[in-house]
Length: 506
Image 1 (tube, rainbow, N blue to C red):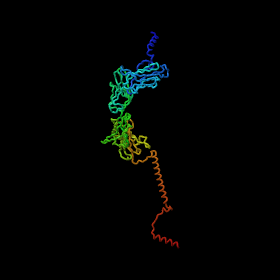
Image 2: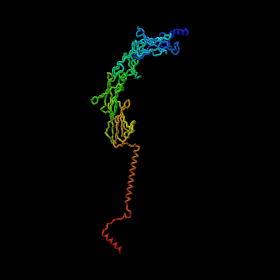
Image 3: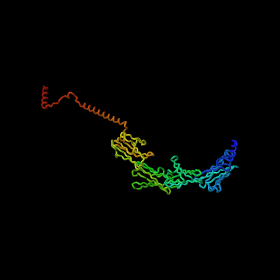
Image 4: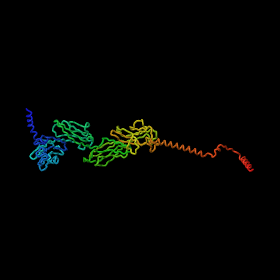
């Protein structure tokens, strides 16, 4: 057969199949069927379009003389088709009573060429074959769409209470035999996503947690190689945060123990009856009642000043509807124990021990000397000369071999975990003889030199003053300094004087 004859032959063979084709799902007469799978409770759109460019009207839009009739044939082939939706020339719309008001045309103006049927929400009894007849002047177009429904059942229904048995089942209206059912938890996509596959259509979770909430997808694989899937959102009413939280607080400081629900109960029509805290301390059970608050999902416990006796495990119990959920919170208290109580003498050996109650085993300690700035926003590792060459300042113990003035101030013990800084406690170290405000080291030598110079000057002045004083007391006739005093009897002195007087008179 020549190539030209073969081409003509194929053209005549394919012509009857392509002459009536307008768009997938819509043609003159009956087109090939489309199949739409929808999860029960969600919305479905059964496609049916007509491109105005393919009609005799022109490229913009269709004329007003349009009527649309949607019919449905039930799940059994023996059932007669019944009207679902009818849209007349005048714009009057008729709907089947049992599907009203769940069905409508997707586009309110059929002149745009969109005659798709919208069903919201979809029910399991909506399964079947749907047929649309679109009359446009003298032309008749048809669409055939098969609707399949996937049913996902959650027991108990959303929201699921944490730690209660959860059953999830997935079924469809497909008539082939089921080969496998797989469940995918899409909250953590990638290699860490959770996947469960089995022959059963039901998945059970014994103790659901808040981490199990989120987007799930069930996938059904059948013997005819048909694969159907449906996604849904699982809501679990539990507590936010880790399952067993630990709160770290310094002795004497305030502490807030968290108790926050994952959802607001009133959003599901559920009321919070009561919420209270309990703590077993010294063999006595302490209770703190919290008033009902339907507009909040957080019920924290505030402790104004904690001590070693407050450390331990607390329990928050919240009543939601007729059920109660509880969570345990651990309070770990930080304290510092010094080897010497009160002020420490300079030059003494001193030891600080950082103690943490209810440690989890993965904490690490670090000592820091707070900066002397007015605000304690900047932390700097202390480097006094008496600690140089010793072990690093990590660990619960801080040893100072010889206390000096540079060690005065506030020391802080910080606790770190895998998630970062957990808490801290401070200790104020006072040293005997330490000045209230110590001058910087750069000026200490100058002050010492000034004091020494002042003492030397005072000593010189004293020596000079003493010399001047001795000089001021010396006699007026220096020659008299060598004369000696001799004792002479008083009578001999008188006679001598009388003799001299007589001689003078003569």
